[in-house]
Image 1 (tube, rainbow, N blue to C red):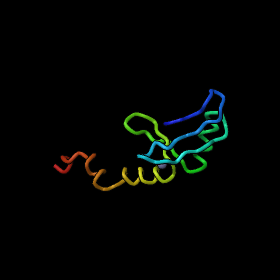
Image 2: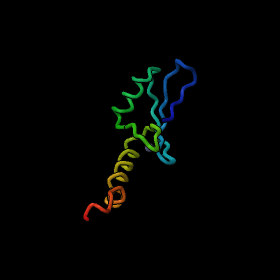
Image 3: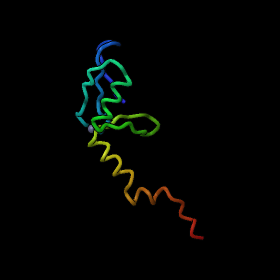
Image 4: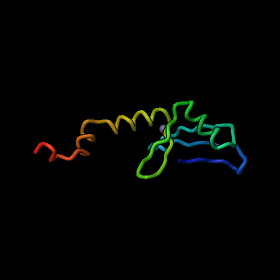
Length: 84
Ligand SMILES: [Zn+2]
């Protein structure tokens, strides 16, 4: 998760953690929970990537979820000795 603000009480800007994605949200609030809620209301989602929380914009989240659900990826995680 990438969050920017000039001072501790300045409005929070949330940057998308997608690969080379330029999306960001000026949340216009300095409240962390409020900023997250605002991001969620615009389709942004927190995702756990290699044990770190990231925030993805709507497009990146859609892409991320598609990556997670491809048949090949699912097959790789299944044990292959269950048929015996
Ligand atoms: Zn993005």
